[in-house]
Amino acid sequence: MYQLDHPWLLATLPLPILVWILLPAYRERLSAVRTPFFAALSSAAGLRPQRGAVVLRRTWLQWLVAPVAWALVVVALAGPQWVEPPIERIESARDLFVAVDISESMETRDFKTPDGKQLGRFDAARAVLDDFIARRRGDRIGLIVFGLGAYLQAPLTLDHDSCLELLHETRIGMAGSQTTIGDAIGLAIRLFEKSTAPQKVLILMTDGNDTGSRVPPLKAADIAAGKGITVYTIALGDPKATGGDIVDTKALQAIATRTGGTFYLATDRQRLSSIYRELDAIQKQTFKTMSYRPKRPLFHWPLGAAMALIAAYLVVETGVSALRRWRFA
Image 1 (cartoon, rainbow, N blue to C red):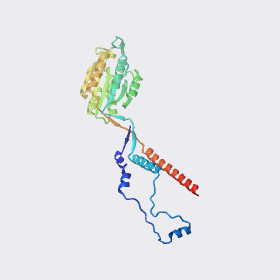
Image 2: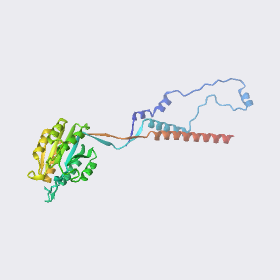
Image 3: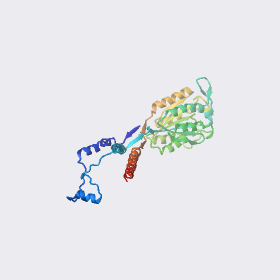
Image 4: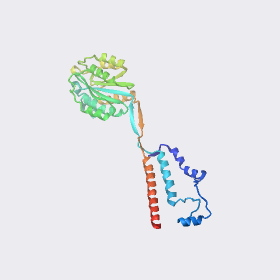
């Protein structure tokens, strides 16, 4: 929309009228010589006598151009501008990392869909994460994947579409065949060091069987708690499984407890979806939305129009005067 930066300047529009009414007319005194034989002297000199006081008459063009040019100058001084639609910038109050286990044990197909089909643990987790990340509009979200080692897949960002794209490009076994929960927590701690957000949250999703971390998971949890990081742990799969598919629920529960988080057990996709709904309710989004409206100054248009109008008037007046001199020459 259009608006004026200094609209109060429009009050000066009637100023020329007040000047014309209140101030006396301009007078100019000239020296003169009085002579009793003025008529004979002017006739001998070939001059045509005129009235002693001359009041210049304004033409209709002056009456038109002067007020229009003044109005255009005043409008230009008032600062007309075009205000663009508002642009919003979200300032996150929370940084959230999602650490996803992509070890070979996450390929176990023990998740049931509502229609009875069997899904792998990682496929079920990825499907639910799509909806969860898309809903966290005000959070900066990052993605960590871990197996034999822990790796940053997506840095903290408000570009959730890019984060989801990188999640979909992740494949089982990319990080090795083992599960290093402690290393995943340790990596999150290092990545959170540069964060200035008042809230730091790590959601750890795994089948819970640590098989070779350089940092013990509980030790990493203690360090995270000291750094003000809250860890929510989600155990995937059947807690009664044995061998390589075992789910160490006790370790995950201890990690969550030590950091002030919550432990969840997801045995099917429906339960996994409900866990993320609970996390939405617990970790409510708190963020600042800062907006500004870009402004484009437009003062040059009325100012240019005023200058063009005055220039056109001068050209016309000069042409008319020249034509008159030519006719009487």
